Image 1 (tube, one colour):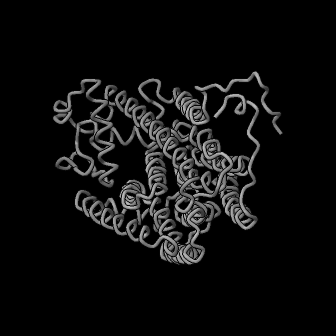
Image 2 (image 1 turned 90 degrees about the vertical axis):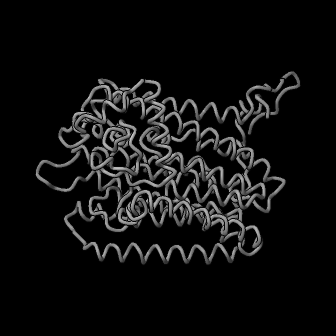
Image 3 (image 1 turned 45 degrees about the vertical axis):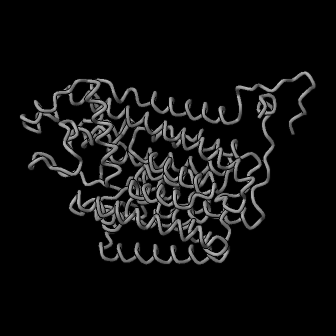
Length: 462
């Protein structure tokens, strides 16, 4: 236990817990960017390598990212809208409206700074445009812009959550997470996450994380309609926030029925409008691709189905889809039933984590960025350093093993199973189920015990 501060100690008015939290997130994000610097040298050559497999050097050097390829292969380098094929020059980039706007905005910013001539590129062969060093340098800059924007979104989300958590001490009825000893410091596992450092700049996943955080923060202040809009937009950005929306509606249904009604009503309208716009813009591909990837992807990575394929079993796509749909429907119904019966809004994060974990574990692919989807819910529901670090260690191992597997770094020459990859997937499944169990045990035992704050924070003040 920390000794009480002496009479001569003066709290530091600058280093408040919130600023320590943000400084930690900046340091972790900077570390993540620095570790990816070698990937960006020589016009991002490793991102565009084809040996031994497409993007092989990127996978084997642990700097894989979907962003550089996104810039050079979808027409963004020419200023083509994400949903257009520009008369057949480029494949249609089947993304939802919010993601497409972000992609086009980031690409336009890079081109405005570099002075790229879009019209000139439009008159040349697309294959030539893809190979141009100037375009590849812009792809590196595009990746950096998205990474910095994602880090900024995370910082703003931490501020929103910290302020909402402090405010929820007064408005406990709407708090979608358990009581914490110190709401700001309990977010430190999110700010200092090794998963964030590893996956920053890999994709757009942190945008969905930030939007979910904003939605939950707004909900705590009693603005159910605004929360519905934000969570619906988050769902259009990445499908997983729908789990948070459903869990929040379920836990609030009994004791806060009017607020739950406003939340669902506004979210449904927003999803309908945004979904229709995305469907029309992409000819339906933006929505159907998500379903196909979840149900029928026979080249999916990181899933239990990938283990079966690695071990030589090839279940039919119909059987896989039936299992995925059946388990997902059962898990969703069970979660909604228990959440609605409990009426405990402060258990929303726990219910959402459990359901999302079930959906991801049974799905046909578990891409590296999916760990970021689970991370904020895990921290909100169970801010226990030891448990979170053990789970994140398994997630980091899976990301590394998946990239090595895709880069043929750990595949056996004789065609035997990649045991490193299989072990990583099994460990990830065990660690996720274990964390869900830990959450249930902790909740049944009355919650997380208040942790003693370190001496340094006692000296720095509040």
